[in-house]
Image 1 (cartoon, rainbow, N blue to C red):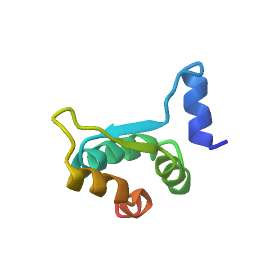
Image 2 (cartoon, rainbow, N blue to C red):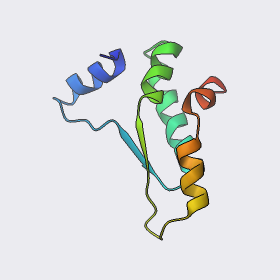
Image 3 (spheres, one colour):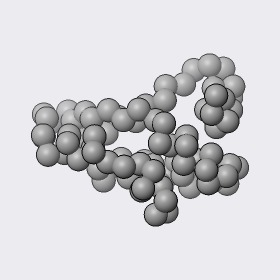
Image 4 (tube, one colour):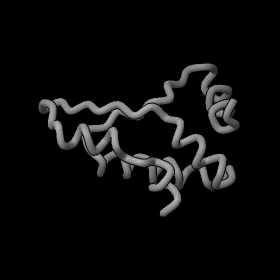
Length: 85
């Protein structure tokens, strides 16, 4: 099991959902960047990259579906984004 995932599950007594729900690429990037900044203090780059790229990403927009945003979210390459941070 992924080291970061294992640590988080242990800290939260098994209560953790490995998912990001987002309405567009900008908010996804913002969330990933925040998580990266928090995790890189305690874990290696490879550990953080593997953890973040294994998160399930779900498109959700309360204002109604936007096919362009939805396609962009599902096409987003997390590993490539993380490498640029």
